[in-house]
Length: 302
Ligand SMILES: Nc1ncnc2c1ncn2[C@@H]1O[C@H](COP(=O)(O)OP(=O)(O)OP(=O)(O)O)[C@@H](O)[C@H]1O
Image (cartoon, rainbow, N blue to C red; front, side, top):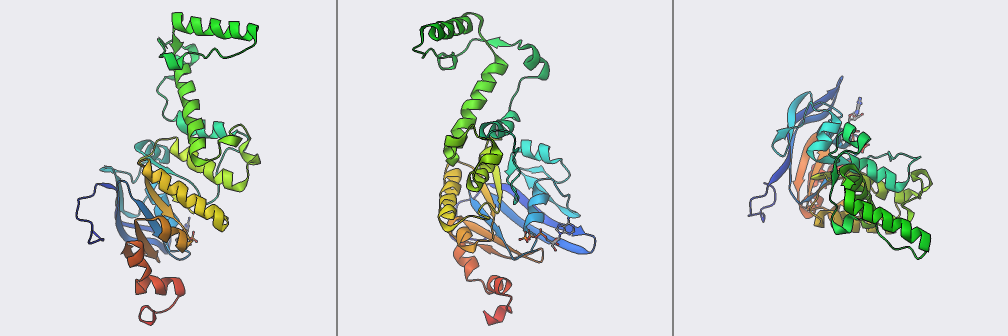
């Protein structure tokens, strides 16, 4: 729709369709329309108060548009509860980090992964559903201590004979996945530390890992580089690219123009709740309206 070089049809993942959102007299979003395509990294930028966070909130169910609608994967999002929207495949991080401070990094990610578990509460309580485990799911026998090794052997044999409950298998798979995600975002060395004790940069990465644990189709990052130094920002850029290369679609709200320009495929620019530009980073950077919005100058002076 915007980049002339895009000849191949792209699959729309999310559509913001003529969304207006008012807070009393304030028009935070004004007849806003844009699309997010599968597999892209799209940036949503604009000066302070432009409506970026409100747009995020309309997409993730925090606010219901006054008019217009948001569609995700062909289904209407507007009006659904945030956890339902999360289940549809939209995950987000927050401008102000929101972790469970008294849980470990691993546990924080497990909370995200939990939303994907399938066993019922009753099944989990009674651990009724026992299934034959695959060889790699059997308890390991690796201790060099004779007594401990014997115990491990007993557990392994019992799992072979009686099977393992589906719930336990899911728990173990969840833990493996959570650890792998911590490794992916680069903080596995602190997996067992309480979230509140992690350095700031780790906490930001942990938020991303937790969002990824819900296996989203769209990951929305709200100013993920806030408070980062240039080296940390550079590392974050690499991480965002890695996330896209894994097949996720990424929406990025960011104040740091350099960061946005360096990582996005396409950018939507808001000012006073309206879309004033949309296109590749180069197109947006050279757009007089964008320059004016950021510099506070009239468009024809840029
Ligand atoms: N809950 C609310 N109640 C009333 N007005 C609000 C509310 N949330 C946002 N606004 C107003 O809506 C407009 C858009 O705000 P929003 O936070 O979405 O902008 P933003 O682009 O995310 O800004 P920033 O970059 O400063 O985070 C602003 O005028 C803001 O004051």
